[in-house]
Image (tube, rainbow, N blue to C red):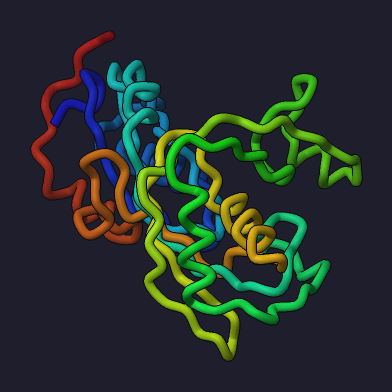
Amino acid sequence: MNFTKGEVIAINKPLGMTSFCALAIVRKRICVRLGVKKLKIGHAGTLDPLATGVLVLCTGKFTKRIEEFQMHGKEYTATIQLGATTPSYDMEHPVNATYPTDGITRERIEDVLKQFVGDIEQVPPTFSACKVSGQRSYDLRRKGKDVELQPKQIHIDEIELTAFDPETMQMSVRVVCGKGTYIRALARDIGRALDSGGYLTALCRTRSGEQRVENCIELDGFEEWLANQTIETIEDE
């Protein structure tokens, strides 16, 4: 491997860790192995701290291809709690509103999901990295400021209902989608389409392009994986 010329590394990001923190751990361990102080590295698509799964990292000259990798299709599995919402549409914040769930059945959910397939408009969550007048939306929200984001065009290839529990009002879905899709916003919008509320209780990116979660390197095993790699001589960029 030659991390300066460029490598693509897919890790399984752990729960509760930011994408930047996972990237920093990988970068530090590679730098120690190479005996260098710095290494150019970036990721092709952020995962929220409460999400797990495929995080694609590009090193060296491959960082120039990050936008290319971001355009690749992605697949997620998600669990949605119906009947309530949180400010971030996931479990980062406590429930701030509850809604009736009368009339929500598996058949109705499957019918509602059809309206989210194809090219649709989606308003990103205000607790997101979207920029408003040069500032991150989540920074403004955490300062107690109101934020209004404009809808963006996204594409969803497939949504499959994989489970529904009418007792707990939890549903699970598999989503295949393009760049810029917020699954948290999808949970919100599914809840609204059901005349109720919805927020994520679990999220995993199971695929990004050709990288699948079952083939990813576990972060706590990255050092061992790295020790088993043959490293080429570093060349100056």
